[in-house]
Length: 193
Length: 190
Image 1 (spheres, rainbow over the protein chains, first blue to last red):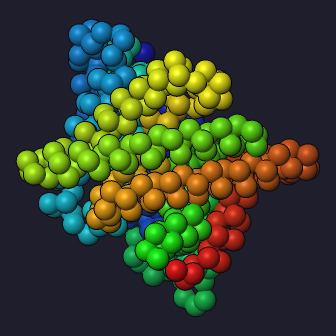
Image 2: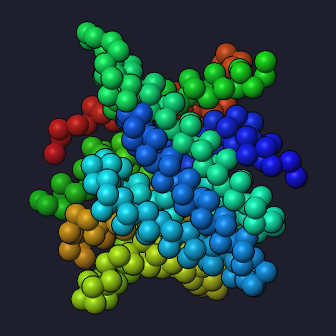
């Protein structure tokens, strides 16, 4: 398999958020600012790469019947590692992401890639796939976060770009749905042309 | 009075789907039809309440006394996965009609983040067991309410003329945004 295509597919063609519509809970829940979106994306990338690596390493040792529970245990272990590491080194981000860090464990992308890709492919392709998909997810979350932050508070990554009365609704819950709806429509349009 | 605050708070003020963004996957995926969303809501009510009771007992009688708090995520997700399997097997034996109605939704619930989310929130908010049960039931009702409202709107949306680029998911998300806006009206009620 062409590793370059394997890596880049997660960004546009098979983007987990815009095209596959997986992992929408953290996508909507944490993207009130670009930095939160990026942090969540990178945490998920780590879990995705590591779980793909381990699953593809031990895929022949796992009996078919208990494969899903085994995948869940592997994923949950890496989520716990991320959780404890973030609590120790980035406490502010840990507070901001809150409940959504342990919930990486039920993010459909992670289990989906383990089941659909890593349990069938070689170790190297699985790691590349995890990295591509994870960064594609981080890319989508950062864009959504940047759009919401810009429209809602006039900043991107904390840099002030606009002044005056802005649309506060984009930082609040309804804005997440509305901004994502328009972004997906835009992505569909771009994918067609 | 405290229970009343929990009930109103979780159904309306901080609705699990529209304000807390948990359980979005079934919300977007299953809510095409009114009947399926009621079925999904019933299955979630069942599993969420059971999962909250079991994880609460485990947290306070096993994890906390033995200093195993860091195992929370792993233990909780395994319990939920096992519980879903168990409920499926028991329902199949005991009540075939109920199994017929809820069966297809049960496997989907393991990866419904609302169930794990409510179990963790119950611990984080330091609820007693009884408060936890009330919290779980009201969140499941809130989930069903959002799902049913959304399904009703989507059924009508199928008959409307939507601009080509917005058909499907984009327009559904915009509708969800407007619903969330409506639910923001409950802010400050309790």
